[in-house]
Image: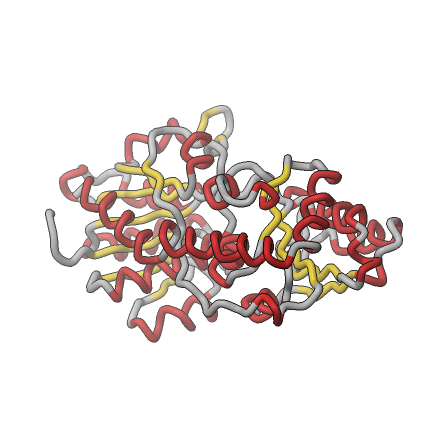
Length: 347
């Protein structure tokens, strides 16, 4: 197939609605708008349907790997490409197609979202078991491509640009928006905010997100004497509106495949201070050096927060430069085109 409509099936083993599910939803809608036939397996049914139904994209729930296998078996006959997301969907899809010849089955393209190899099934690496049944891999960042098992093509995640918020209307708020899980290093954000001294100048720290570290994070804030300046917002479905009020985003996680929250901040013109590792480097390297700090280096993160907080012009310049990069290199249009090129390379 060298052109024309592609019949695409996205597969996720999930009943949630986090970064990967949102990634698949945005891409599926963009592909349907380009004239392709698209269907999606997996993701929280209500939230996926809210985005897919207006575009006429059918959705099949799949909270377990076996449900992915059954759905793929039922739907694969009318499909050109199955785009899998995360290892469980890889396994479920490969199992569904195991006895089909390559000439008679859809191409399988695995999107790799995390900067690590697949895990193991008992003593055997999962990658070794399924690699020959995966026809191509897409990595969402250079860091992911460098870490995963097997070759891949980098196609950056993309989002649509958002209206640019006037920097003068932003509040003295440092925002941290992420799940409260150990790998996200929320504690580094708390420590950096406390060390910056910004609380003494009327700045507050807002934390949007939920997770098992909520109680520990609250106790940590109290131990540094900044608990009065910290507001826990919980999970927010209106994160763009929260971002539009904030003055700076801090993103301390050093293992993001790319960083959807960071990308959304760039799109909306919110200046960022982020751990200088993994996918954050694809997003921010080469901009204002204050946008990146050495992972887990609380003092450096605090200095960058303080410096940007005291530099209105510098914050605005960083926000504009980051937004221009997002529009140029991390747009949904660029992602859809890059993904389609990978599909066509295996059809």
